[in-house]
Image 1 (tube, rainbow over the protein chains, first blue to last red):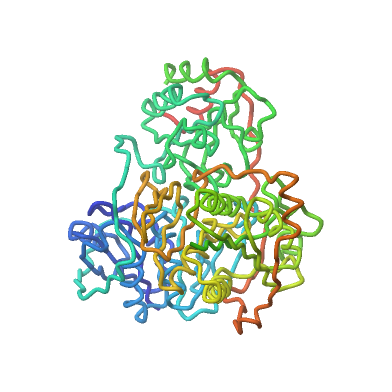
Image 2: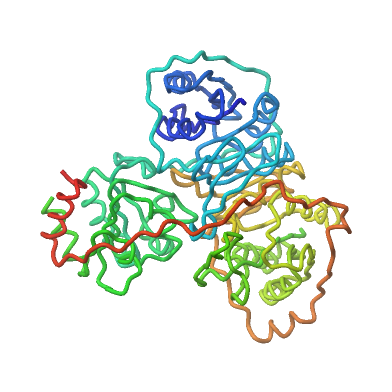
Length: 308
Length: 253
């Protein structure tokens, strides 16, 4: 069995944490080859080569791969697919964009958001916003899966896998990149942060969301948001935690002014410790919180920020 | 420009999901079913394109049980012109995999020749997030997934996409498949006169054999179980007590 792992690369930089966690998920299956595709990925490839358990790193450099457009990246992976029994990637927005396209071109099913690799053919994944866990066995010759990495430990570093460059790409030229609006932040990445402070509709406004940020900064935490807060314009879309946003499992998750719709719980209920602050004592979030505080967040959050 | 919108009948998003105790799946008997919320956004976008004079026909397609007629009627009441239902099963527990759905939709596209397919980014039942990408690949079209803004200029669509770090804008060549995210629009409620009118709009029924397509699944469902429940913890009475508890639990330094 051979596994091809598509690594997540942004502006030439490897998402080391997500890639190393995905390695942990598939290391029992077979030899792991990590694919680094982008405009310039030599630095990313060197980082990937250090992950223990990686047998080989493939480098594919072309401007067409630079902005993670689905069509050229899928074409590249399809051209490599025959050497592999498994093609996997961390379950990022990019992977979810690209993997189903590859699956269709190979005439196989895709297995999205795998939460546990049971064996080489069998996978667990949440359905119905995490209200059920389904175990599926694939009958396809090539298994394609995106892997949720939030509850996995990252594989350690210290390896030295060989790096091989591949050439000769076919860009179908169906789409072109215009721009990325990526928020620059000194805060940790939401999907790998050990502490997350999240705000919901109860926070009330974009200006008041700064209060969530101040508490997060005090804790060295990432900032998250519920769908309601994002829809209301209090927070940007990339902060959304939930069924259709990011799935997180930090050591500590502090939910502020979040009622706890099942779609939100789907994205954070694997957190080690959950704290809920909400003035509505009937809010469903209290049913899963380890520590609940029924109080007005406008008084409580500054007080908590000062107390830490 | 003709726009095709695939829609799925799923468990209503407000319904509490119950997993069957024999592990065979989620109980869908006597449960309220609705249009997949992402697909409502897709229908809304297509109808707005028609209202803006950019589209001349909106065709909605559903694949599944016969009762999906109701879901299609909802889309017709929102403003779609015509509906196609491909009846694949009588059992509402049968979920057809995105690969098979995409193959059927490809066949429909070859007949209907739309310039654009707009669909929801995922269905809230199987949460696969795959059909649009698969259809685009099979047709050899461009794809623009997770759209939060779409504009048209000649044979190009400019699409802003919700991605992990923020937003990405791309230009795709039409024909294309666009999958929509939550922030694209706010779907309308159908008015009573439009609901009445929708009953007279054409709805054609087909079967997979009309398209000679094999829809047998590639994934065998071994079991479906409830996730481990998380127990409610304690309610603390003050910020001081909260901080003490968090220190005790080793959650903060």
